[in-house]
Length: 285
Image (cartoon, rainbow, N blue to C red; front, side, top):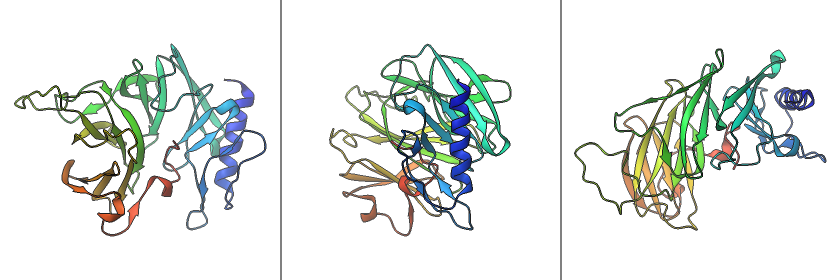
């Protein structure tokens, strides 16, 4: 990475963390996509910052660390075709950074809660991906854990929207319109090639494991679906919708509590919600 790019990223993030004013787009092409004031004099800034020529920055939930991928014009869920990926991880307050060169097509998704690992989406093809973690001390890329032995190592699907748990220890992502998927079944379940799932991908940023909660068809099959996700303020329920149904998910039991015919989450949820737009650390789509 060019020194100018690293310096600019550090300056951007350090400035965003230091001010209590909302940032606005600059006249140059480098700006904060979204910001919001936090309580107690601490500013909450967007997890994603636009850098030089569209480069982007992913921030940790605490805001202490950032991950920067130069030349990434693809979204998180879009393969770029890179054979090698350079990712710079920086701690702006310490003016420290390190660049990792990884074999493969990677995009950073989130930091672990202790910020010792960076979770990555590795694109294996245009339609298949898997989640990996970069151990920041050693620079090694490793698999993440899985809760069930039948859970797939790689998956197919299109990520739509994400939300963090209130404590920042879990990241929920709604995937829809994936090809036929039976990889999350138990051994005794019958195979149905016509069964198409949407699912909520649960990534534990503390335990470094992932789990998929399947949402049976026709959830998410409408190409014009209005996808949304939210979590209750106490973290006990996750809500996902495609604009026709709302899946109410038990966040502790990791299972669908009920499916409700409704056009929006607010029609179903009781109490306050945390939405992607409410979170400074949510990845901008």
